[in-house]
Image 1 (tube, rainbow, N blue to C red):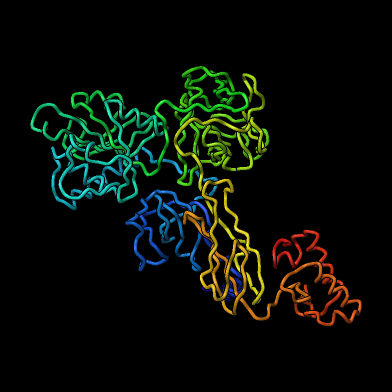
Image 2 (image 1 turned 90 degrees about the vertical axis):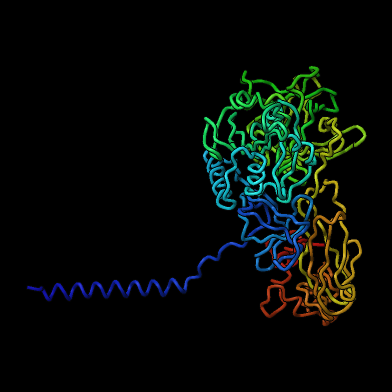
Length: 593
């Protein structure tokens, strides 16, 4: 028999629970939900190939046919109002990209390379796509296979016909850039693969290897092979025909030694390395000498190991051709930030041991992880003598410093002091190591201005010592605002955009200025279009009943906006002129001019 009493109790509980649920839903609607954070200026990863356009819309043309490849890293410098487009520079071109294809990289994020499994999956997927598209076997037609692979992976774009292995090296221009943004770098001779590995810290992607077959039906064309990657001494690739190592197009993985042994009879001509980044590697390395002591820096092998993890850097007398004193400079960014890699250890870079406390931090070798404490600016001081200040990217105020002029002097990070010879380094290379401006800003970025008045704008570039730091000012409407050397002059009512642009045209920042006949400027009690101590005196006299202050601008003088002029407003002035950044006037105008 059904228990009516218990049934009613259950109903009450159900109704109460439902009511509580509805109430919670109601309040959830009332409670403001956190808005998704707007994108911020910084480094982004390209999640899918994206075109660089002349303006923030697909209706604009593509800048010099520039396509930024997937997995590239770029710096976004400016956004449209809805944050759907960002302005960036890539491969010497500046334009706009759709933010939908980008992903923010946090400052402490390390972008790692592909794993062996990912490379094999990439080979399989590319081969399947090519067979599906063209419906043909590539057996024996290595040139067609490699060309289609380059096109499929969006590395190169090489028209009709197949590649000729014998002519591949001679027909491609060294250091040219493919339509997908990859730089083509040539290496010659049977040791070309080892040279590529050495030049790229032990890991290299996207290599086209050419062979000169001496006999047989393919002697006329030679042989050409695409290597997807060389990682940890292993070669990841596929062949255009079936072998004992696998079917046509199947992923193959071999040690470099076994790979070279297997293809020994093919006779290697050389290789083209397709690299998204650029690097600078003098053939024999470059010595770095401290000006104060005229001695090279060397690596102290603290751990008695060949890879020098954690080994300190010291100044020591030149040891001739010692690899511990020769260094390679590899570009980390297009703006001229470098990794400093010792010739004695291809997997290590110079690092600040304690970047959180740079003063007197030791300089050691550690595995490169893309952190700013492992990347350096070169500030050219004396071009004729190759003298530089080598600055830390994470804090450019701190530089490499020798603590003495004797042998075994420690190299540390100390604040830069102009004229200190222990902070000057001779880097005898003809390569241009000077850095470029990474960002530029204007303060204020938006302001009002009265007609027939002026205001000084401040343009700030970072880093300030970059070689292209010269700024050019312009107004998009001189009938409203003119500008001379950063000082703007209000001409007539309206709105104009004042632009501070680098002289080389690579970067710019803007200030939006609205010109009014009568300017409401908080704190401008005497209506002279500026906030100064004269305004404080005007308000003080007004409060004390001085009739000479009867022309005071009440709206401007009411700092705290409580509808009256009293001692509380004077206190706000006092805070402002004493440098208190928490006061109302500072929040309104920024620092005191």
